[in-house]
Amino acid sequence: MPQPVQAAAAAPAAPPIHQDAPTSPAQPPAPAQTAAAGTSAAPATGDGSPAPGRRGRHSTADTGTMPAVTDQAPTGAEAAAPVSAEPAATAPESAEPVSATPVSVNPVSPAAPSTPVVASPDTVLPVTAVAAGAATALAAPTMMHPLVRPGAAPGAEAPAPAAATPVTAGEAAAAAAPEPEPTPEAGPDPEQVLASYQWRFHHETLRELVDNPDELREIRDRLTEKLTPATDNPTRARLLSLRAVVSRILGDLSKALSDGKMALVHAEATGELRRIALAKARLAHVLQWRGDFAEADKLFAEANSTELPDRLRATMHEHAGRSCLDQGRYMEAFNHFEKALELRKVEDPELIARTEMALDAVSMKIAENGMGPYPRSSDEILQVSKPPVPRFDERVQCWGFAGADGRTVIAPAFADVQPFRDGAAWVRRPEMETWELIDEAGNRLIDGRAGWLGVGSFSDGLAWVSRDGAGGWVAIDKQGRVIISTGFDDVRPFRRGLAAVRRGGWGAVDKQGRPVVPFQFTGFATALTDGRYVDGFSDEGLAIVDAGGRKGVVDRTGAVVVPPVHPALVIHPVAFLIAGPTGRWGALDRKGRPFIDPELPSRQVVMEELDRLLADTKPVL
Image (tube, one colour):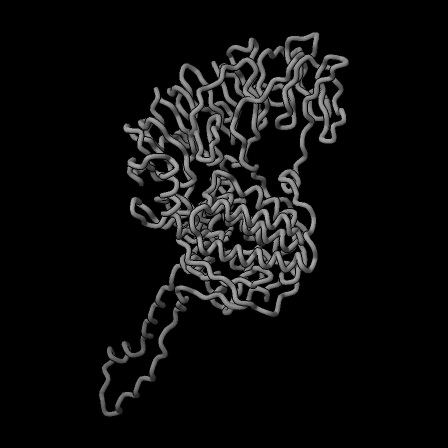
């Protein structure tokens, strides 16, 4: 019995990242008038950078990386358009080309983009329909560092000169000249001030309570001052999304929505996973307060990649749970809160306190309204439909495709098939040895007479094909046009705009066929700490390369981040785990510098040490 061509054992892709769809404005819920005592969140040092610790070296308060790479200083006008860059959407899992020899697999991970030292998801919470207005949150945040407003000390009146004292012309001119005004003393950095807030939350709505909105308005003004000269995408993405956070808490939801959407455009132009995730989560929070729950939940799901630090992922689950609470989806809210606790396996008193408060709020709602609807699947939240799946018909001894309900949607007429990927599937008719391409309705896109004996699934809009199925692989689009004519010895599917290919040695090319990584490696072996192995580059744009049994890391530009000198290497969300010559484990920071000496017995122990060093980092969502 013929069997369908199975997809290559590629690692499961992280949730796809899409640009936000237009949302319809919604009236914010009426503000709650009562403020209850809330829990306080400790100050944040960044979006995930480790605090100094026993084994840590080079640690900084950055944006989510160990010893983080700080953002460039702002330099541009506020209206600057985002700089174009390779999009960061996660490619769907793709099958290896039929007839292709598998590549050696060892994990590689992308370098982590730097993030602002002020962000932390633990601080932002969703709102219920009862308490969604500006006033809801205006009850009482305390500040660890009070905001200093610059101002000149009141001047005393100058005494009138004695009439008998003669005044020369020069003295008179000097006296007439205006005295220079004292330069106002610069206040604290608004990002640091925002990061150091100790938020309190309403016990029912789980929203921030703000006592002094003027302080937040001043923070917003100072963020604007930093934003005005900034022209680079990373800086603008960070500052715009933080300004959106402040505007949301102040109840200026239109301003928050505008800033949040523009921040996401700039973040996606950087192609950096963590930066995009933060921008999506902050925008999702704004949409939630506006009542645009479907789009908010979709963005929360897209942002929560397994390649992000556990603390950031846990906080995103908290906020997604609060969004479900606002909608009356109480079982789904419980699931999110439990997942947040599961991700934080180490002791985390603040998370536990916040989660207990959230669970109390859910329990109160259940007592009043019941359990609510059954939890949605990820496909429902992401608003994606499942493609038809291959099904063999015993009567005609041919393959066809069935829909999600089990009914036949493409009649059984093929001797062999591949699963749908990227909206298209390769099929082979009994009378032919070559493959043809069809869409999900069964319409023919590429005729079998095109002569492709070897085919790979589509990914990023391209597929590798070969005339003989053994070599000479070229890339085509869904119209059958050859986009990359270079014949490669072996290939892997495109992932986020890059594909691992072999021509003598292994390297990588972009979607125009331009070499990005030189063809000099034994293979790609990108391993992630969540247990996945990736064909080529991770969502962050990092890949582990194998140079004769020694592992290193390259980024999506081809730059060597970690030289290939380590016996084993795994990509961690904020570091690189390495094995030393003796088999002991340690860690490098995201610049490839030593961070934890290779003297620990296992990867797990290193990960626990990293988690300890990251204990004080909390991104602002």
